[in-house]
Length: 301
Image (cartoon, rainbow, N blue to C red; front, side):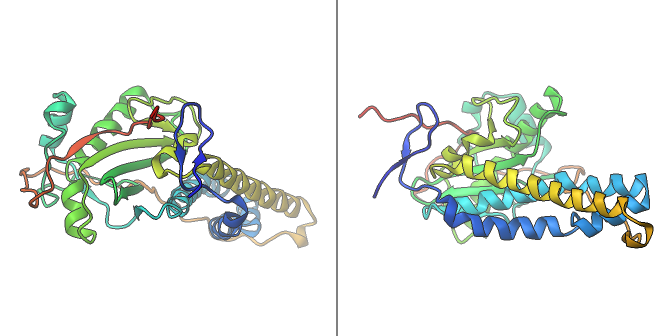
């Protein structure tokens, strides 16, 4: 099998690579779906005709739809690696007060081999955008995709890291119990930032251009960049059509319609946590390690 370099300095060569020509039709279908509603030219025209509040409401849908685009695009590319299980459903992970304190007050070496029961009480949760599990290496990545971290304060980023690490403690049990007995011997967390700014590689905040390392597919970061650019281009085209229609004769304008129903896509619940318990591992699974994602190093032989 031919190995493909990811193109990043010092990066290893991967046995799988993106074929942009083959992916383009799938990307176009995804762009069509996420830009048709509520961001079609007709919907934008109605919002413009409806006034400032309706225009502002529909424009707030752009980052929401772009977030969905990135999550699904990453899933499409991850499927190119047959060793990966790509999970996007049933991923609500409990985050208890005890787990957070364990992460915030201890060095990772003191809790990285601990696995917690996914049925621990409490309703404070964290839902990642994806979990990728390599069936061969038994390495799981818990992934949070952010369109931008530009508005995030450092304290907010640190809180997200702690919450992800605390949630990662239940991932091995969740995978084994709810996802066809998938086994993870190590869990790493990573936040992917699409704007490629404010990176902290060692601390688990990566630019989206480093996606190659997570999915072990050469050209993955470049492909997601192309997907994002084409999505922005489609929205720009729709906006120009809407603007032209709005600026035309009154009888040619699109009638005012209902404003888009925009909802917050995060939806994490916060309630009193319940007790936390340690779960026994199935025979032969050994210790579980939890930590931040790491860039693989090129082998020197």
